[in-house]
Image 1 (cartoon, rainbow, N blue to C red):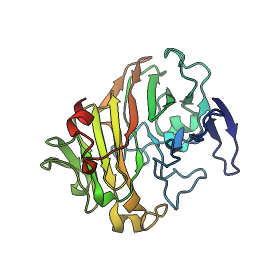
Image 2: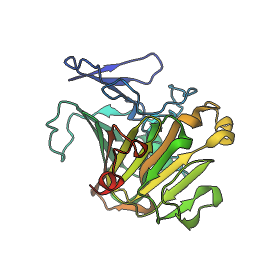
Image 3: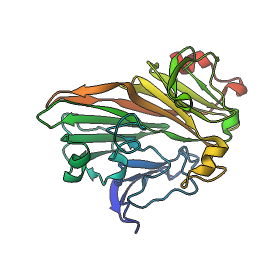
Length: 307
């Protein structure tokens, strides 16, 4: 596989990863603007990530869809702009991604974002944010790293916001977060404990689940497909869907888009990550697909979550 950087005319330069030997033309698209994956398809050319019908693919706007990187702040958990500034910056291909060993997979790319003079005005900390993206059959892996290149320690919150494409969110279940505590952002971040056996959706949801397991399953009954999210170094998980009223209030969100999307994010929010000078933090997440669902009778929940 080869990488090529293209300019699509909007200022959001993109990097395409294609395989000439892949007859199914499986590919995904990464934009250097935001270091953001905006498309990931399976072997049947089905799109696995959601993109808003009103998404603006032009700076300085953030892109509503794909997998944006939220750094150095998630949401409004701080004084910076919503979800931080990394998703609104132009990243670069990283030709020297040390200390990670070179990927043995041809289906990978390394990106880097360094602090700029503009960033230092709003967040006076010098950093390097690296992201390795690895594509394998049925799997998409992201490995983010943050290095403190400042002379002082700093802390940050972080998330990989996974906009997932679903058939009908009202028919989707999320397994693996039951009995956990969460902050409800619709209730001024009041802390609750999840009582349901699985999370289902019949209205707006905006929650930060705390101390979550390393594996979460998103079951789409209609598509007979399950997405499995595995993660490390990111203790929290965010679940978000704006539902109809909020969707209509968001300028870059189609009125009915909420029906076909769900965000389940890997995050570090409750306890900010603290880095001393020249220390480095590393996290990871893997999204994978299982061509089945609970309703098909072919998928054992225990095998998905604990197998």
